[in-house]
Structure formats: C-alpha cells, structure tokens
Image: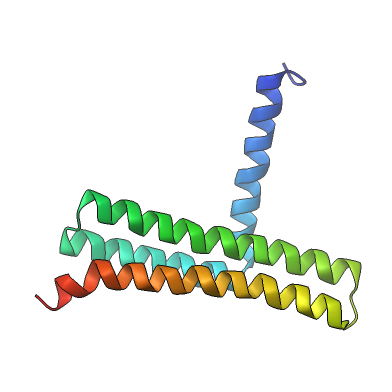
Length: 121
C-alpha cells in the first residue's frame, strides 16, 4: 500500500498539511492573513452575506494565502541558493512579493464590493 498510487497520494496530502501547518506556525505574514480571514468571516456571518459572496470571499482568502505561501517558498529557496545580497536574487524576491501584493489588492477590492453595500445601507 505504501508505494501504491493511493498510498503516494495520501502521503503527499500529509506533506501538504504539514507545509500549511509550518506556514501558520512560523510565518508572521500568514499569521496576520489568517487573523484577517477570521475577522472577515465573522463579518460575513454578521452581515449574512450571500452564498456567492462567501465563494468570492473564500476565493480571495485562498488566493492571498496561497500566494504568500509560494512567496515564502521562493524567498527561502533564493536565500538558500545565494545567502548574500545579489541583484538578481533581489529582483526574484521583489517579483514574488509583488504577486502577493496583487493578490491582496484584489482581495481588498472584492471585500469592498461585498461589504461596502452592507455597511452603507
């Protein structure tokens, strides 16, 4: 079973869960985003947002947190490959951080579309 197709998938899922836990446990940016996701979820229950709004909200949360996880991995790999400052490594890290910024900006826009009508009605 250990080397079967299903066994490999189960083991891979375990690694993924371990990685998500490591992100939450050790990465301050993911911890902040996790708290924000809890707060906006509480707001969703408070304002009784629609099913579609929940879907968009969870998509935005997932997009930001997945982007941050990839950014963390890219930065760790870049630091491992070249621990000293290097312009190309700096560029790679800036681009990776930029992708998180874009995801977060889109998430804020989605939150605005969802919550501003509830707040100002």
